[in-house]
Every structure is written in structure tokens, then in C-alpha cells.
Amino acid sequence: MRVIFGMTLAAALGFSALGDGITSVQINDNEYTNITDVHISGNGKIFVSGANGMTVVSADKLPGDFLKSWNINVAAADAAEKQKAADQLNAAIAAGDFRKVGGMVYDIRKPESGWVTCYGVKVLQVLDDGALVDLTPNDESYYPVHIKNLGTVADTDTINFSAKPIGTYSYENKLGDGRTVRGYDVGIICSRDEIPDSVLSGQKAYDIAIQSGTPNEDVLSKLPQSNDLQANGSGFFVSADGYLVTNFHVVKDAKQVKVKTGSGVYPAEIVKTDQNNDLALLKVTGHFKPLPVSQADAQLGEAVFTIGFPDIILQGIQPKYTDGKISSLAGIKDDPKDYQISVPVQPGNSGGPLVDMNGNVVGIVEAKLDLSAALAISGDLPQNVNYAIKGKILSDFLAQVPEVKLLPAALASSNGVVSSTQESVAMVLVY
Image (cartoon, rainbow, N blue to C red):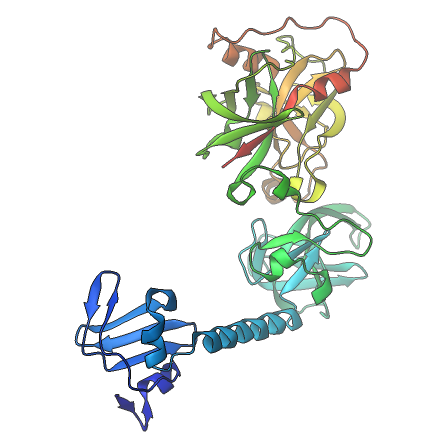
């Protein structure tokens, strides 16, 4: 047994093991002989040293009698490792590393999608509901935002923070002018009984907070292959034999796609895509209720609605309805392929139908205005500016696939337009 500064190598690295040990063992079809040192580290790995050099393996790769001969107590090491992990978790909870934002608990020790981390931020003004800060105090540009739950800060302080975007914040400046800026929330520090087991165990980086009297259910577990789910969007059937439309950006990185309807979950094939117009055509096997696609232009101010599946982790997997108006007959920078709409949409609405009051698809929900870009350009944040691809663009795309048999457009309003549309929409699941 080698000695390092008066102690054995085993003792120096972790749990000590010294005895009349077996001096040869087979590991993964390799024979190790003249073994002189076997010890277990703090993370439960076994170090075996001998004539073949040193190798590191997990305990399950070694015979029990071999481990016993070297006084290796795997159970004790496992218990010590579990206690170490428990101590680290308790310390993280005490340090405020678990934060609640909008009913969700986040483990901010892990990279959180959508969160931002900023350094050297200057506090402009402390308010009752947070603080106004300048993200770029050392630049000529002025980039104010509102931060909630910063804790104890004072005007002119320089701070660092990680926070989740939560929308916008409106206020009046010292001149009495109304301003709207981006809003962020660093979150409320969680007590242990608010943190769901899925986050405590490290299985998920975030999940719905535990609250007394409210459901604490993992809605994703209701979906097939939930652990492999990478993204979701919305879609709608355009033919009775299973052709379905969604956005290209919903399925662009998909290795597998499934479609969930009110009647079940179906594997889907990507038949055709158009990246420039952000369109994708899928095909599932079965008989479905299609929506008619209108080639006629919608009118400015026309009432429209969508049904889709936004933010399913928090809002659930039931379809959601929102409505609004055609705000403009062109998109960003007068893009002629899009409508600007006031219909509220969120991540997950992408690919859903934009429907008129006659039940015709006049567009396909595509995107929200990039608020960061708008703020950088105008110094203010627009409210509820969203976009949909025009029905004519969609019709031209579908015309390239002769197998798709579209319904004729409906000319008059019929009863139950919303419920009829709901039967035709589907959740697109991307793996």
C-alpha cells in the first residue's frame, strides 16, 4: 500500500480499504493482476491499482467477494454520498437558489431557458414593486427595464442578477410622460415545501410550485414520451384524410413528430416544408375534420380568433381560445405575406389557425414582435403586436401537393364556429 505524507492513498482520496485483498480480478473482459491498492472515492467509484496500472469502475462491475476482501463498504459510501447531496441541497435552498416566478419554481443553479443574467447594472430608482435599472450604464445607449423581487437595493447601486422576462412594465417618468419597458422577475425565494420533487431531485430545472389547495400535477406526464419531448406547437387539419399544417419553425429540428387530437395521439410524417414562409405540412393516418382555407384577403379591423396550445407546462394541455382583430394588412416592415393581429398569442400557439367569423382559415399564427428589438429601436415596448401568415400564402403552399383536397371556403356564418374549429386543431409534439 502506497503512503502519501503519512496516510494511505485510499485514505487520502476517500474511504479507506486495507486488508488481505484478492490480488486479481476481471473487469470488462480485462484481467487485472498483482493488485496492490483498492479504494472507494467519495462519489462511489472504485479505484483498482496493480500491474496493469490503475482503472476506475463502478462497484457493480466488481465481484462482491473481491470488494469484501478489500474491506470496501459500498453501502456506507452510498449513504455518505446521499448525505453529502442532501447537505448540498439544503444549503442551496437556504441560499435562495430555488425561486418562484409566475407559479413556477426554478433551480437557478442550472441554466434556465429564457432567463437572462446581467452584470454591472445600475439601479435608477427603487419602487414599491421593484426597481427601474439601466442594463447598459457604461454605454451611450439607455436601456431601462423593471426588475421585481430584487431584495434590498438602493438608488445608484450597481448589481448583478439573473431573472425571467415577464412582459412589460408601464410608468410615468419625472416629466409625467408615460413609458413602457420590459419587465423581469428574479423570483421569490422558495421554502422547501413549495419546491416540487421533480425539481428537488434534479429531474427538471423547473416545474409548477406546490401550493396549498391547488393541483400539483406534471401535465407533461400525460403526453407520450414526455421525457423526450423537445417542443410543442399547434396545428390544424386541412383535409379529411389527415393532412395537417403547422409552422416550419415548430418542426425544423424534429427527429420525430406526433400529433395529439381529442381522439388520440398519432405519429406524423413531415410531407413538405417552406422555410421562407415558415410553413410545414404533416400527414397522419385517420379521418379528421378539416378547416376551409380562404384565399381572399382579410379586411382591416376584421374579427378573428385562434385556438391552440400555449405554454402547456403552466397552462395545461387543453386547447385555449383567444380573439382579436386584423391590425394591419402587412407584417414587420410592411412584409406583404403577413397580417399584424391583436389576437394574444404565446409560445405554443405557433402553427394554429387564424379563423374568421365564418369559420374560414384566413391565416396561420406565426410569431410575436421581438420586444427587445422594438425597445432598442424605439425606446418603448409595443403592446400585443403579433403576426400571422396570410391564407393566400398557405393556399399556394398547399397547391404544390395535389393530394391535399381542400374544402371550399364558407360564405356565411354558421352556428358553433368556435367548437367546430376546436375539433380541427391539434397539438404538435416534437421529439
